[in-house]
Image 1 (cartoon, rainbow, N blue to C red):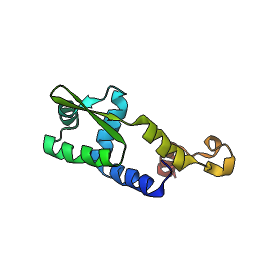
Image 2 (image 1 turned 30 degrees about the horizontal axis):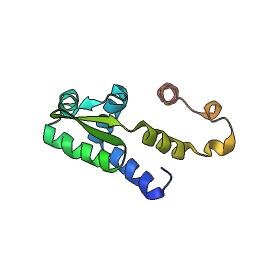
Image 3 (image 1 turned 120 degrees about the vertical axis):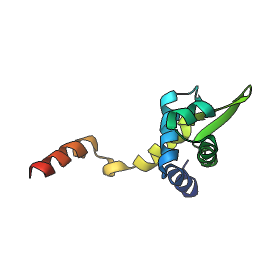
Amino acid sequence: MTDPDTIVAALSALAQPHRLAAFRALVEAGPEGLSAGAMATRLGLPASSLSFHLAQLERSNLVIRRRAGRSLIYSADFAAMTALVGYLTENCCGGTDCASNSVDPLTTEAQRKVA
C-alpha cells in the first residue's frame, strides 16, 4: 500500500466515526473476524447502515469479507493496516527516535488545566 490513491482511500474510509468503530472492532476481534450481525449488535447500528460502512471499508482494502454458511464474516486486513501505518510513519522524525520526542496528550491537558 504505497500508492497515494490507495492511501487516501483507506484514510477516507476511516475518517467516519461508524467506520472507524467497525474497523477497530474488527482489529480487536483478530483474524477470525466478526459476523455482520454480531458487529451490528456490538456497535448498536442498524444492519443496513453497517452494511454500507463495511462496503466502504472493503472497497478501501482494509476489510476482508468471507462467507461462512449463511453468514458474512468480516475481518481486518492486517497486512493492509500494517502497510498503511508503515506508510504514515516512513521516515518518521528524520530517522531519529520519535518516542523520546513524543508528548503525552493526557499530561499536556493536565498541565493546561493547572496553568
